[in-house]
Image 1 (cartoon, protein in one colour):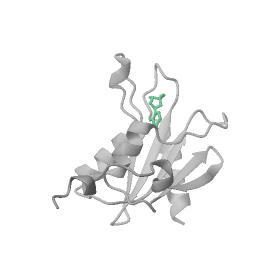
Image 2: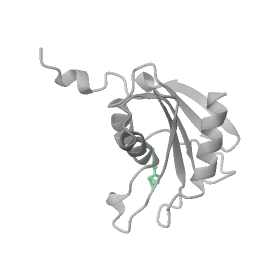
Image 3: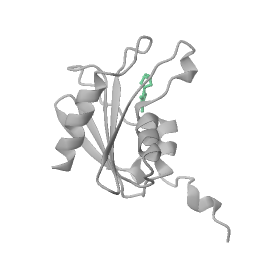
Image 4: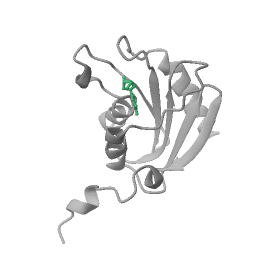
Length: 136
Ligand code: THU
């Protein structure tokens, strides 16, 4: 099952998050149009604003592989057992929007598995995206 595949991959890779300052590991798993799964973790930086979110890095992996369409997104954030749910931050909603549709599912997870399924459109209603820049 897709959700389980995405979740297992995210849980595994979250161990690699580089979080010496935030102490808040996040993993993102993206399924692209081809069905492949791309992963990202957050990478803190001593200059705090230069931190890169897990979603941004997963998008980067997908784009580097030559793909352009996000079909599903899963986010797993926080320490194992903390019960925290991490939804994509505002900046990452905008980043995801570049390659998503309003009905693209976003799976929000705790350590136990998927807790909520929302659509991209629910996370970022009336998004500004590529279509806003199309020449009429
Ligand atoms: N973080 C993400 O990776 N994705 C989000 O959507 C929310 C926040 C990271 C950034 C930073 O490393 C830590 O979580 C705390 O903000």
